[in-house]
Image (cartoon, rainbow, N blue to C red; front, side, top):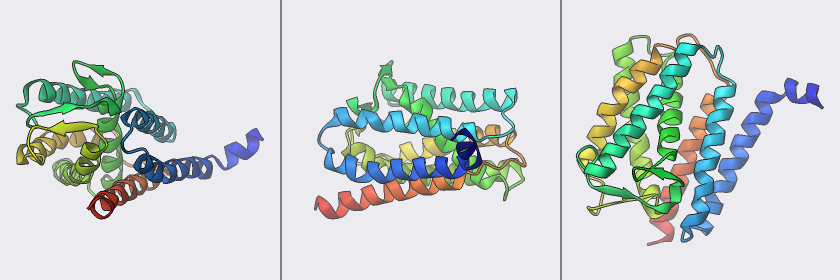
Length: 219
């Protein structure tokens, strides 16, 4: 049994991720008016990050410090933003994302880590220049946030003082993401992770489907 798992560990990891996201789409939609259930989503996101990092080789001290820094800096920006409104605009977090410190869910640290990691790993083999990597990665991070916002608001993860997220939010995402992608990009040169594309596509399909459900099933 152990030898079977070792031989097929990449395939098994991919199946776990695909099944998890596959179940999450109808599950979250069915329970969309029960915020307590959504806390399972950040637990799954955390497990996904741990699974992805398990396949990251080599796992050096510098890489570890870099990805932790990405999460901490992202979380601090969120904490400043939600308590002052000066970073992203006026917004508050709902109960869906689990435990909070300073009104900011710990889950946001995980969210910044996994999103920056996936995008950096996806782009790094194609873009060697660090500045170009940063700008391309920051642009994709903004696209990711555009897909995320309608779903997050509908599932009561957070809410805005304005009807829709302000332009300031997307500018802040770009400005914050740029140095974070550049930082992590320094430590993932010539590295491949067999789970990156699968998790990235799963994220993309997950948010795209939920956005379509919001548009067409709640009209």
